[in-house]
Length: 414
Ligand code: G
Ligand code: G
Ligand code: MN
Image (cartoon, rainbow, N blue to C red; front, side):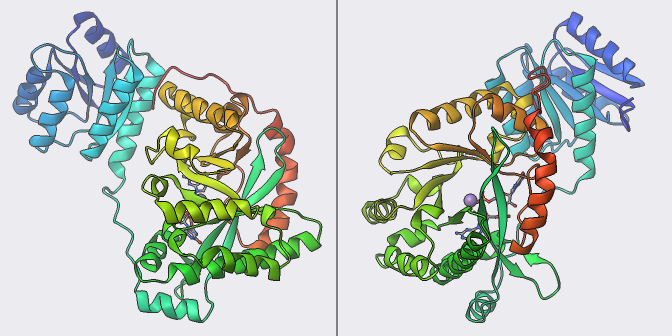
């Protein structure tokens, strides 16, 4: 039985489908099943009922008032009952309605393709009850005080962590992404999404990035001396690309640590590339001429066109995690993921998948021929001194990763 659901409302025009769904709900232990043949009936029923149902299942295509109109009416009336969306229509349509519902802040357990079956329905209903327990919306990250950040940079308090990037075919480590960390006096670390935008807005991002790069190069040299050759990826804020000095400064820093440009990759977020003008394009071209790798970061979130991508000499395409984690259960995401990997291959770019969280994510990426993976399944960002221990642990996992098989792809959507 699905915990905490004792009553449910089904909005579905087909009598046959409605009965089928009611029977499934009863099998799941739901005691009271209310039925409506369209959105208007569902709203009328909600007004009449003494106690609101715990959850709803909403069909999209219905006469009189369809499922999308029903969801919009729920929003207007501020009715906050969690629900599951169901339809026979294509995944892209289901996905866009799901996005709309979530943008309203509604608790949606998933969008399911009809005819419904027991297991996906149970999972989706459980998911909407789980979401009900979470506090929403999430509080926005509190930005830090610019003066405090300035002082921290002057005192060299910033640290960097390393998140491993591994070859998806062999499981072997290829490199790591360098991520800035600011130790919190109260313990732990202040997350970069709280201080990177502050650094950008207060003229501190240049100094910050050079400090990050300095620590990363010093570490790369130490690892190299021990026989561990890793390619390190450093994030570059788009604001830095407007500086004419940047390429020279990076060159001097790298030379001082005797690191070769080929051992570094700079990541630039996709969204920043769309509006990039002459100066930025020149900086990127010069970085590439000097031998550094260039990665498009968060690919898939920025709506760049092929033309925009083709005018910059990239070496790597980092596919955003929202197209990676969970793609095994979502046909729409799978198409996008597969075509991004294929496009990277055809353009001669290394494909890197972010957000690899499960062995199912891993198995799918391997099947699609993705080159490199990064994510919690492999390893979280860690201080340099933890990396040797992680490597030992990781070696023990290799055979498991290499034999990871995709079970079944498909059936349910979200
Ligand atoms: O791993 P984590 O949650 O810390 O990363 C959050 C975000 O902060 C990432 O999107 C990453 O690109 C960004 N970030 C981390 N370090 C740096 C940095 O040194 N420079 C820039 N520009 N962004 C960074
Ligand atoms: O530069 P970028 O935005 O890619 O930075 C990586 C970010 O992604 C960091 O915030 C890091 O903590 C986060 N991250 C790394 N691995 C995973 C993962 O497997 N799943 C999720 N949800 N986030 C991840
Ligand atoms: Mn990045």
